Image 1 (cartoon, rainbow, N blue to C red):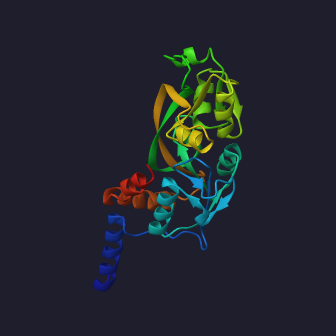
Image 2 (image 1 turned 60 degrees about the vertical axis):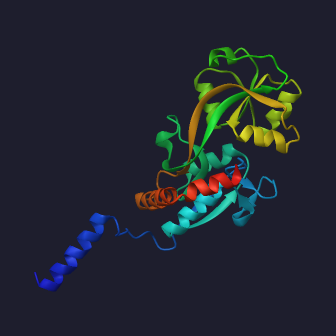
Image 3 (image 1 turned 45 degrees about the vertical axis):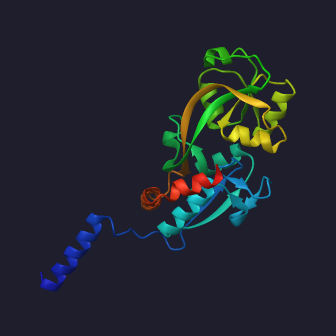
Length: 253
């Protein structure tokens, strides 16, 4: 092998070993990103159930945009309703991604993951004046529990055999709770408090039981190239090390 060829080979090998060499993605490769109203992590600026691109705001929305910019991967972003539909679309369609998504054991093998983007708590909420006390999920099963269909909270409670009254919009559960149509609302904190305030019920609800904490991720279809996952995760890790993730998060809370 000529000296020049050997130098070229060694340089390429060094680039690969150092992680600087990137596999080529298909020409015009683009990820279709889907999200929903899940404030303060992702939400439509005009509070509608459909929005595109710059009309979508929130902690996760800003982080995902920056991740894709740094990773040099093209995308389109759409906020849609209901969650059940965009969840299934991401499962079924190559090139699709979904955020903010709780990474749970039930979902682990259904997607490829990039994150975490943030953290949330799964809770049971009751009316502020309620004397109801809950010490376990078994106790919660004795009451009428409202949840958001196919959300991580509803999936987990159903797996624990807690009967649910599911709604297609999480905001419906706030009205059901305040009207006495359900006893408990299974939701996320701080999302639940934010939504209650937006619906005109600030301070009307309280947390009576914390189920667990959950990290929020970008979930991508299983056919997504590993190169995409690696680039995005590397970008997010760099953003976190720089303090960018904390700065964006603190600007909303």
